[in-house]
Structures are given as C-alpha cells and as structure tokens.
Image 1 (tube, rainbow, N blue to C red):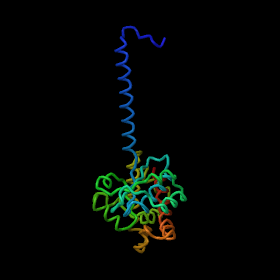
Image 2: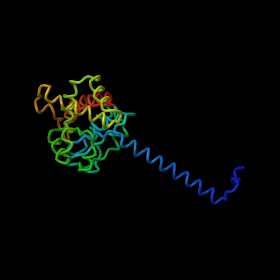
Image 3: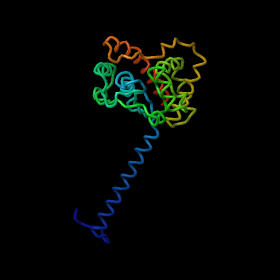
Image 4: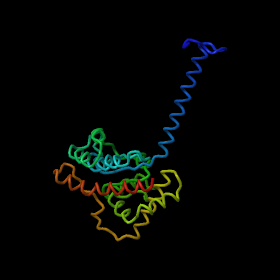
Length: 234
C-alpha cells in the first residue's frame, strides 16, 4: 500500500507536493521562532572583562527565569574575548543555582553597539559600565542601571504594584517590562539616595577567593531582586 500513488498524480508530482509541504512547515516553524524571539525580553549584563561579574549575573538570572519569555546575556567593555568564566566565578555560579554546563559554555564578548541597542534592560556591574552602555545606546538611558541600583529602587515596589503597571501595558512581554522599568525609574525621586559605592559590585578578577565571595555577596541578592521583578512583570 505504501507504493500506491493517488489517482491522477505521477510519482514526480507526489514528491514535489511532499517537498512543498515540508517547505511550508519549515517556513511556519521559522516564523514562530522569529515571533517568539521578538516577544522575549532581552536583559543585558555588562562588566569589564565579561569573565567574572556579568556572566555570573547572566547565568544565575537565567536559571531563575527558566520558562519565562526572557533572554539573558552579557558582554564586557574591555572583554577578554572568547575566554571562559574564571574557575572561581563558575564555582560560585553553580553554588548559587546556575546550570554547570551554562557556566562552562560561557565565552566572553565585547560590548558593541548592536548588542546594547538590542536590549530592553541593561544591568551594569558598576557606574562606569553603565556610562559605557549609555554611550553606545543613548536612547536606552532610562533602561540602564547598575544591577544593585535597579535592585535598590525596585525593592520599594510590591509585586502587586509591579503587576498592575505591567497589566496596564497589555500582554506583550517587552511592553510589560518597559512599563515596569519606567515605574522603577520613578523611584529615583522617591527613595533616599544611597552612597555611590553601594551601586557597584566589586571586581574580583585576579583577586582572592574571599574577594570573589564578597563580590558574589553583593551581586546575588541583586540578581534575586531582578528575578522577582521580572516574574511579577511577566
């Protein structure tokens, strides 16, 4: 029965019909992938070498946002291009919930204008990195924070306030995040200013394990707060 050809169709016509069906399915699948990509929010972490702080923030936030329409990635202002995360950073990433293979597969890349411009939210490890990102993408000034600054400002907001702002923006994940980011920005004028050093994450590169742990102690609570905001928003 498998060798039978439908009446009125040659084998060549049947093969062509099958090829057309496969092409249609492929086109449809690619369009779904493109549409899903457009609907994902893009969170960009920025540090200097892209081998310690920003990839630690990247892989730990990614682990916390599994299943959510969020793409988390990172880059460095003076990246050690194609280098992996340092071993201490990898160890700490796994200890704080990141997948071991995710930490192992990271490779450093330079922060370039297209990478910055593609982001919906830029979270820098220091004020210096925040400035560098804004210089590349000035239109994202109000979507760019140090990660500890974002966490500090967002900490004044309840889940209900975040969800309400997001709901008013509709169902698009990117529109919802934009509304919540604007809400966080407004907290700058409502919360007490913090010492400037409280907005930076210390750089542990080529320093002791104790320094790595101190750096992670500043960074991971901020990652957890970012995750809370994203979950409430999306």
